[in-house]
Image (cartoon, rainbow, N blue to C red; front, side, top):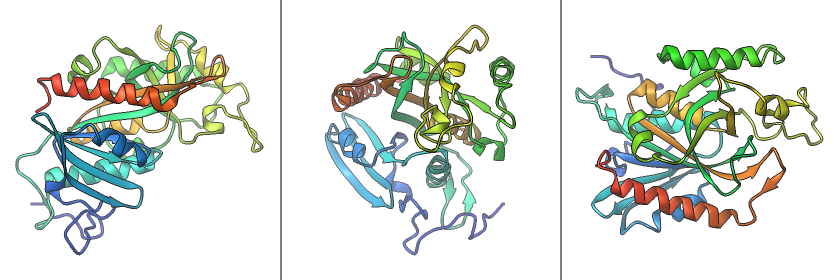
Length: 294
């Protein structure tokens, strides 16, 4: 049986995983990820009771109960690099015996539910709305380090995107998709679309400050693309990596985007906290009602 090297799977003196500083019993089978550490408490305050509160670096974890369902909420920080850490260490907690450093015979498929913020690219996606990512196109390089099988029809979307970005020399995007099971339950009847995951917040998302940009017309070009008859609805910084790594590791993932801005008409939410709270309540209600989530 393959034993993972000490420097590949790093643990702390108390046996916890290196960055998250969690033990296997600290997490539930359903995990809500948020970027902002302060948003962990905004979610967990709706729980009926808490049994785990831990933090290390930007990673804050609360685990507790909402009704008869045990849930974990964890902050990831910003960007796909942090997603690489969080999802791999969550998987290790669920599917690796940390003492023997070997994979468990029976693997657990986690439910990974992102609640994050995003900016819309299309005028018909309202500010303060909630959008679920059916697909995500990654502009970073993370998933090129992993082997993930992509269905042929999804590759068609990726190829269409590549053809539309011929102005972008050296770009090597990847594509990943939401869990069909979670889309059909938690994401039912919500706005949905293709999400673009950028490797940064400013120039990579078409924002031009003092640093300038090699692509001053990026927003116009992205919003006008035809991707097999579909449009890119929004941009953020984590979803493609969450979907890609979840597929690689055998987990189910869905990403909810609270639309704080619409880039097409330069609007930003007048009350971001209210929009986030409304979305958190809706998503928690759907989790409680879902028969697909234990």
